[in-house]
Amino acid sequence: MSGRHEPSGVSAALMPRSVKVLVGVLAVVAVAGTAAFVVTFSSVEASVPAVASSVPPEPGCGEKAKLVIAVDPSIATGVEAVVATIAPEKLGCASFTVVPQDSARTFGDLAGGGTGPALWIPDSSEWLDKVTGVGSSSFRKVSASVASTPVVTVTKTGEGTRPGNWLDVLAVPGLHIGDPLSSAVSSAPIVAAFAETQAQNGDPASILSALVPVAQAQLGNVKEAGSTGRIEKVAAVGGTAVTTEQTFTSYLAAHADAQLTAVVPATGTVFMNYPVALTGAGTVDASAQAQVLIDALSSETGRTVLSGLGFRGPGSEPLGSGGIDVSASLVPNDPSMVTKALARYELLSRPSRALAVVDVSGSMDYVQDGVTRMAATAQAGDLAIRMFPGNAQLGLWAFSIKLGGDTDYREIEPVRRMDAAEGDADHRTQLLSHVGTLPSLVGGGTGLYDSVLAAFRQIQSTYDRASINSVILVTDGANDDPSGINLKDLLDTLAREQDSARPVPIITIGVTDDADTEVLKQISAVTGGNSHFAPTPADIPKVFIGAISGRAG
Image (cartoon, rainbow, N blue to C red; front, top):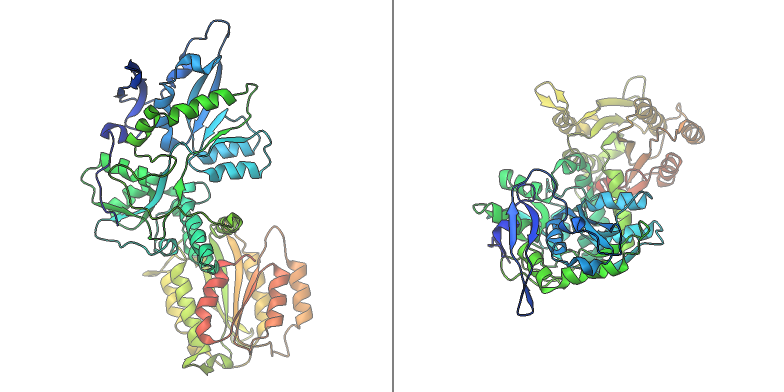
């Protein structure tokens, strides 16, 4: 297991790009048939144009075609330096302009049909697969990799242990992961967890459950300023960050006193592989120039420049010094599962706004395996309340028959943000206090249908378009209120009042065989929700958390 290492390469080259920008002065000198070079740095505030773009046109070319290379910022400094070593005559009637640009933005330009670069070097082939998936016929990968770097986890030295696998990483409270929807580095733990699970024929549901708190903290994840920003957060306040070996070694070069450790799980990790693609943009066929670029990046000079910046070669060979121990490269055998998980993540990343409606009828006091149904439900509620981030909204109702006097339901806590102040505490604290008192309300029959309709109308009438609005229903019985609405009228009313502009899925959880699971499935189906079943009280907490992970159907 690797700990804190001194990085290899020229330390100046490893300083943050915002402080030291490579001006691109690589003096290529022929020495006995080989190339020697010198790297010069200068402090600048503005972007520096690529050297090759200002080369005068060769005779007979007229004005040279300027081929834009969009390069992920993590490797742009190195690509700029290597491009500066390319002899102008090798590019014919063209020149290169290197533009550092986030891979997600370049993908958006290409997928949206906008003006794209002639060549693209993203940080991961994941982006090329996405572009191919949207049907770009002229898009073509011309190099699988010109450099690589493994994704790692970073903690303060002495504060963390090596995780057993990437599912363990995803389960770390307050994980500094960034935005998996716009960063291949941030999505790598999810990709790795699926690769591990598929290799062992495991259950992917565990990954989806682990993603719930991560997704619910998405607002904070987006605000974290990239891989370096996540390292800075850990250095300041502790925790665990997801970044790359290259970013980590660069950070250590600029912060020699940092007490940080980078590791990967024993199972291995995902590598950023920096492929090269021709996009087909423009009127010039850049195939020949693309090969010149690839040859330059693959040359001894190119490898020296990139390794000096902390990158591994295309074969993922370990760094000469300062690198992290990696046992294997993790690649899912079914990438479609990752795609589906990220789609679910996108949905889950919108803040939750839910009303939990809990059955407190007399049967919830039944004991099985030493625990009552109500006690297990209260435990599940406690876990869920602690899991939601501060920007989530949650309310709590209890129901039996005439629990509220004129109604079968009673409001225990209104729907509010978890971090909303309530007296000397916050809403989360109040919910935790009240969920513990639910056993004291147990008694009476099951006024299920009236309570369901009232909860649906409550959430729909106060709909929050910035959130996922839902009702979470927990019950162990069938409706036995003869004076209330019947099942047919309930389902017809829910179908009629459902509004596609204000969807309110009802997520149902049936507890033990006494629950009317067929009815619960119908209630969920008509509202676009999903239905779950906990066969024993001991299963309730696990099923409850699983239900939240599939909250939108």
